Length: 329
Image (cartoon, rainbow, N blue to C red):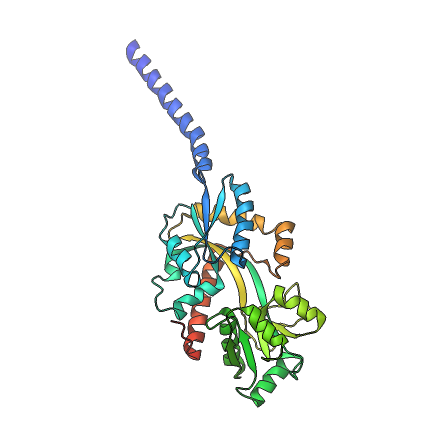
């Protein structure tokens, strides 16, 4: 009998020890689970571009908050589709993330060789930034407001020329969207980059162009071009005196934006952790000031909001591409 009591007491002690170890070990395990090694962010464009610079800023700050190195890996080519293809095939463990830009979402409509469905291969983490294009006109164009430009374009269909950074570019799609929504016929003039389009606007060879905020700002200031409107749904904090196109054409919106995503089936706990960290990073005065230098602003969204944006933009640009008959490959 005494031996049975001793064995029973020993079992209780062992059980208590196991429970104590489990209670203590569980939070340590959860805390140490992610990340335990370096994280990489895939960028689909060359080093030095907008997405690359943003990714490097994010990597530096995210690494500090995660306690692990965050490395930017450039995989340029095919309009950013190569990086998304590589990232979508990575293990869904939080160690491979992807910078996603609005322009990359148009590839499914523009390129017949895209082998994946963006909505099906990504786990959205959150939008990071938003930046307007600015619709610029040369001084000789007799339109000082969007309403005047639309009236002029309707009186002279297929006469006013509008340059973009290339066929299928976000600026090109923005032009075609404006044509459709405003009932006008601006003539698209493609260039091999937005810089050349702006040069030709300054030289008077074209009538209008969509320019990034950072490239447009000095020319607006010195009066060599006239800014009619910004393309974001609301006015830009950097240019509060420039109206939004949507004030004249309700619902019109074209913005350059970046977001962060992981491969399909990224665990919710990792998504929540990463979203929490990026929200904190882009709420800092340093982030606001850094983005403002490029005419952008923080626009962090929830994973659910980012998923909705990805879906809506894919559908919208698919319709624009089909209506305008745009073909790239």
